[in-house]
Length: 172
Image (cartoon, helix red, strand yellow):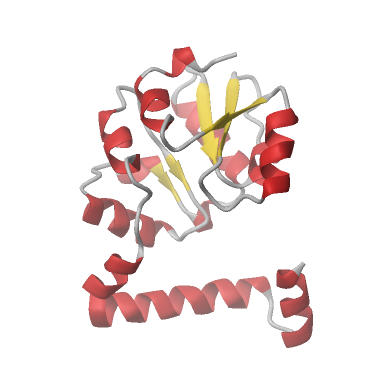
């Protein structure tokens, strides 16, 4: 609601806001890269869990790809650039379809902290397992909705490393 009120009051478009935020980030990164990296923290255990995952890992994010790539490198996470889908890649469902095309014989485990993205996610013809990360942006209402949805598994941060190592234990 606040986002809609902001855009209505200011008359700024979503595209202009995205471009402005990207420009500010670019300037900050160019002028003081280390301070920019320091304010962007990963949740405890996430980087290690991703590094230890024996399966292909892809990141689909609403951050621009160049920022995500820089953060991953800073954290010591060496993912191929083709495994990072940033803001400019479009809707997350579009990225999921691209991942499926690259891995046609595989199921996809989609771990997401924004409930709307999980509810909208489709992978056309591939088994898509949906995991709601309860340590992210969600509200109590989101958490409850995810818990009540039989197509979604709520996963706690403390369990995330186990999910990444052996997802079969979590599949319903």
